Length: 151
Image (cartoon, rainbow, N blue to C red; front, top):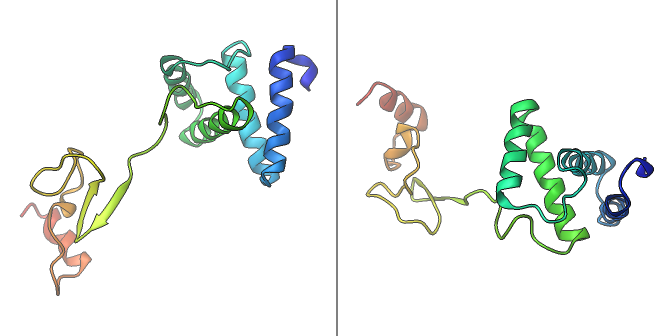
């Protein structure tokens, strides 16, 4: 299979397979991550060693439009592993693809380390049920029913 790739990509792809095995990944994970690297390689003419943020964003939009969110997730994880373990660098700059950390404190949901409004939210729109603090003696089912009536 490696013979159909350009020499540089084939070498890095072989290294990726070895690193996945040495990290103790399951065969299904190896298949998904390596397929993500091959798919990205095909999209970028097998030149994926220096992707910019814009290129990666365009590629991920293409994946989610043509395949699925699950494929996007596996491709992103595979590319992050490829960059970290094979190229010893970060994927398209620092913190690309990291989700916001969500913390649950005192009945409120908010994003950590972000400015918050009076309800403890970081500008994100949450379902109305999360705008109310947790009150002793009120079950979650009753609170959801109350919030869904528009009160």
